[in-house]
Image 1: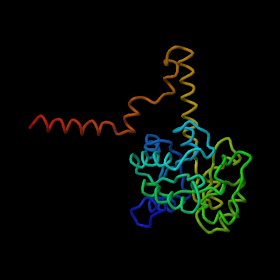
Image 2: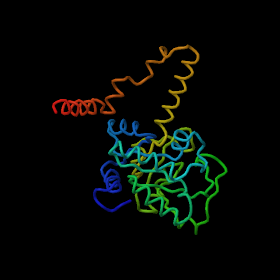
Image 3: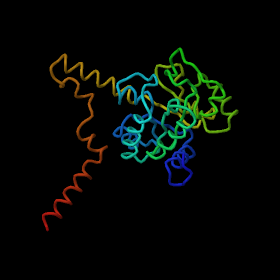
Image 4: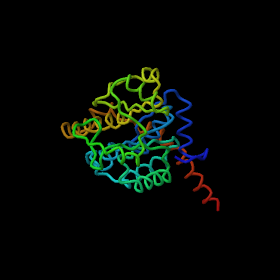
Length: 254
């Protein structure tokens, strides 16, 4: 969003330029963003549906607010150095609201955002019953990504707008699960897997809850869990611990 070379926006643009196409994964919290960075991804994504479902426990139906999203943006950008693209839903209002959203997202560390062309009472893009705003109203919004159903549509969109385009490859929706190479071959710049990790996390959590309730112990699902050692590794836990030891040692010497 910002034009300075050290800004999150500049780092996001650099990531798009450096990796063809850029693989971008959804990170619903600060810890998963750290794991994504450790796996070699160059950028992460915060989905509106992810905020609604995982942070608030509500459907993605335009109920969450800008402040709800800002909380998660700040937590993730504080813990993870990767640039982040953020789902801004419909922008939460008219032109002035959208301007406020851009400023707020920038202040909290987002590298970019996209806005839908739905009415304020939006629905999931993969669900029926959606209503699009008039063209004149959409002039006040930013259309940064398109959810297309065939690679021919990606080609036509790329040729028409002459800007980087994003393919949202989400599971259990209307878009086929094209591969990175397939999408890169037709000019897509960013391949987004917005919800893959939290779908897997939620399924694993549900399986664990059911097993504990059923068996009276977690012993039967230990193999599906992240170990304490891995948790500490991705948190850089021992560096924090070493810092505490250093501070306490200095205090004892005095």
